View 1 (cartoon, rainbow, N blue to C red):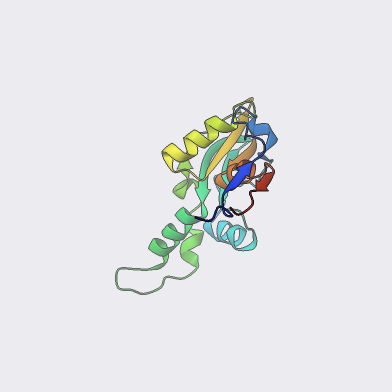
View 2: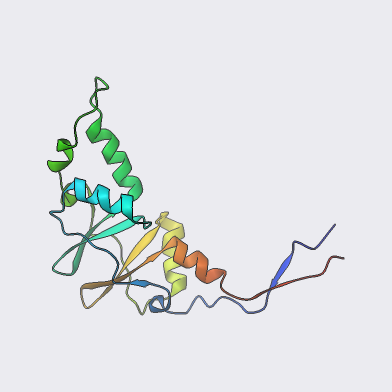
Length: 158
Protein backbone atom coordinates (compact mmCIF):
# COMPACT_ATOMS: atom_id res chain seq x y z
CA UNK A 1 0.00 0.00 0.00
CA UNK A 2 1.30 3.41 -0.97
CA UNK A 3 1.59 5.93 1.86
CA UNK A 4 2.13 9.02 -0.28
CA UNK A 5 -1.37 10.27 0.53
CA UNK A 6 -0.91 10.02 4.28
CA UNK A 7 -0.20 13.39 5.85
CA UNK A 8 1.37 14.30 9.14
CA UNK A 9 0.35 17.51 10.84
CA UNK A 10 3.34 19.19 12.47
CA UNK A 11 1.31 20.95 15.12
CA UNK A 12 -2.13 20.24 16.48
CA UNK A 13 -5.08 22.51 15.98
CA UNK A 14 -5.84 24.30 19.24
CA UNK A 15 -9.57 23.93 19.95
CA UNK A 16 -9.09 26.25 22.93
CA UNK A 17 -8.18 29.20 20.71
CA UNK A 18 -10.69 32.04 20.91
CA UNK A 19 -13.33 32.80 18.30
CA UNK A 20 -12.03 36.38 18.20
CA UNK A 21 -9.02 34.96 16.31
CA UNK A 22 -11.04 33.64 13.37
CA UNK A 23 -14.35 35.52 13.31
CA UNK A 24 -15.26 37.96 10.57
CA UNK A 25 -15.62 41.22 12.48
CA UNK A 26 -18.57 43.53 11.80
CA UNK A 27 -20.29 41.48 9.09
CA UNK A 28 -22.80 42.96 6.66
CA UNK A 29 -26.13 43.31 8.46
CA UNK A 30 -29.69 44.32 7.70
CA UNK A 31 -32.51 45.62 9.85
CA UNK A 32 -35.83 43.83 10.39
CA UNK A 33 -37.65 46.14 7.95
CA UNK A 34 -35.34 45.41 4.99
CA UNK A 35 -37.47 44.35 2.01
CA UNK A 36 -36.89 41.01 0.30
CA UNK A 37 -35.91 42.83 -2.90
CA UNK A 38 -32.94 44.36 -1.06
CA UNK A 39 -32.01 41.02 0.56
CA UNK A 40 -32.06 39.43 -2.90
CA UNK A 41 -29.65 42.10 -4.18
CA UNK A 42 -27.34 41.60 -1.20
CA UNK A 43 -27.09 37.85 -1.78
CA UNK A 44 -26.64 38.32 -5.54
CA UNK A 45 -23.75 40.78 -5.16
CA UNK A 46 -21.87 39.19 -2.25
CA UNK A 47 -20.29 35.80 -1.67
CA UNK A 48 -21.42 35.36 1.94
CA UNK A 49 -24.26 32.99 2.80
CA UNK A 50 -25.66 34.48 6.02
CA UNK A 51 -26.95 37.91 6.95
CA UNK A 52 -27.47 38.83 10.59
CA UNK A 53 -30.58 40.91 11.24
CA UNK A 54 -29.97 43.60 13.85
CA UNK A 55 -32.01 46.27 15.57
CA UNK A 56 -29.83 49.06 16.96
CA UNK A 57 -26.82 46.75 16.88
CA UNK A 58 -28.58 43.93 18.73
CA UNK A 59 -29.01 40.59 16.98
CA UNK A 60 -32.68 39.75 16.43
CA UNK A 61 -32.41 37.17 13.65
CA UNK A 62 -30.47 35.52 10.85
CA UNK A 63 -31.22 34.82 7.21
CA UNK A 64 -29.30 32.21 5.26
CA UNK A 65 -29.00 32.18 1.48
CA UNK A 66 -30.47 28.67 1.41
CA UNK A 67 -33.51 29.71 3.46
CA UNK A 68 -33.96 32.77 1.25
CA UNK A 69 -33.92 30.66 -1.93
CA UNK A 70 -36.59 28.35 -0.51
CA UNK A 71 -38.80 31.28 0.51
CA UNK A 72 -38.20 32.97 -2.85
CA UNK A 73 -39.52 29.86 -4.59
CA UNK A 74 -42.63 29.68 -2.40
CA UNK A 75 -43.41 33.40 -2.76
CA UNK A 76 -42.89 33.64 -6.51
CA UNK A 77 -44.70 30.50 -7.64
CA UNK A 78 -48.43 30.15 -7.21
CA UNK A 79 -50.25 26.82 -7.00
CA UNK A 80 -51.19 27.21 -10.66
CA UNK A 81 -47.49 27.42 -11.56
CA UNK A 82 -47.66 31.08 -12.54
CA UNK A 83 -44.76 33.30 -11.58
CA UNK A 84 -45.69 36.25 -9.42
CA UNK A 85 -44.02 39.58 -10.03
CA UNK A 86 -41.20 41.18 -8.09
CA UNK A 87 -43.86 43.21 -6.29
CA UNK A 88 -44.46 40.14 -4.12
CA UNK A 89 -41.03 40.77 -2.58
CA UNK A 90 -42.07 44.31 -1.67
CA UNK A 91 -44.80 42.90 0.59
CA UNK A 92 -42.36 41.04 2.85
CA UNK A 93 -39.34 42.04 4.88
CA UNK A 94 -36.54 40.43 6.86
CA UNK A 95 -38.54 39.97 10.04
CA UNK A 96 -41.07 37.88 8.10
CA UNK A 97 -38.52 35.26 7.02
CA UNK A 98 -35.63 35.41 9.51
CA UNK A 99 -34.77 32.80 12.10
CA UNK A 100 -35.46 34.72 15.29
CA UNK A 101 -32.84 35.01 18.03
CA UNK A 102 -30.40 32.43 16.63
CA UNK A 103 -27.89 30.62 18.81
CA UNK A 104 -24.80 32.77 19.26
CA UNK A 105 -21.45 32.80 21.02
CA UNK A 106 -19.04 35.42 22.32
CA UNK A 107 -15.56 36.33 21.06
CA UNK A 108 -14.03 34.75 24.19
CA UNK A 109 -15.70 31.37 23.53
CA UNK A 110 -13.50 28.69 22.06
CA UNK A 111 -13.21 27.42 18.51
CA UNK A 112 -13.79 23.91 19.86
CA UNK A 113 -17.15 24.95 21.33
CA UNK A 114 -18.17 26.58 18.04
CA UNK A 115 -17.17 23.45 16.11
CA UNK A 116 -19.22 21.27 18.47
CA UNK A 117 -22.28 23.49 18.05
CA UNK A 118 -21.92 23.66 14.26
CA UNK A 119 -21.52 19.88 13.95
CA UNK A 120 -24.24 18.95 16.43
CA UNK A 121 -26.86 21.36 15.07
CA UNK A 122 -25.82 21.34 11.41
CA UNK A 123 -25.43 25.13 11.50
CA UNK A 124 -23.25 26.95 8.99
CA UNK A 125 -22.85 30.23 10.87
CA UNK A 126 -22.82 31.54 14.41
CA UNK A 127 -23.17 35.23 15.24
CA UNK A 128 -20.67 36.57 17.78
CA UNK A 129 -22.14 38.83 20.46
CA UNK A 130 -20.34 41.01 23.01
CA UNK A 131 -22.12 43.30 25.48
CA UNK A 132 -25.43 42.50 23.72
CA UNK A 133 -24.11 43.80 20.37
CA UNK A 134 -23.18 41.89 17.22
CA UNK A 135 -19.40 42.06 16.79
CA UNK A 136 -18.75 39.27 14.29
CA UNK A 137 -19.72 36.00 12.68
CA UNK A 138 -18.03 32.59 12.48
CA UNK A 139 -18.94 30.23 9.67
CA UNK A 140 -18.24 26.59 8.97
CA UNK A 141 -15.79 27.86 6.33
CA UNK A 142 -13.87 29.77 9.03
CA UNK A 143 -13.66 26.62 11.15
CA UNK A 144 -12.42 24.51 8.25
CA UNK A 145 -9.84 27.13 7.28
CA UNK A 146 -8.60 27.23 10.87
CA UNK A 147 -8.41 23.43 11.06
CA UNK A 148 -6.26 23.31 7.93
CA UNK A 149 -4.09 26.33 8.66
CA UNK A 150 -1.54 24.18 10.50
CA UNK A 151 1.58 23.28 8.50
CA UNK A 152 1.38 19.88 6.83
CA UNK A 153 4.35 17.66 6.07
CA UNK A 154 4.00 14.97 3.42
CA UNK A 155 5.50 11.56 4.18
CA UNK A 156 7.58 9.80 1.53
CA UNK A 157 6.23 6.80 -0.37
CA UNK A 158 7.19 3.49 1.11
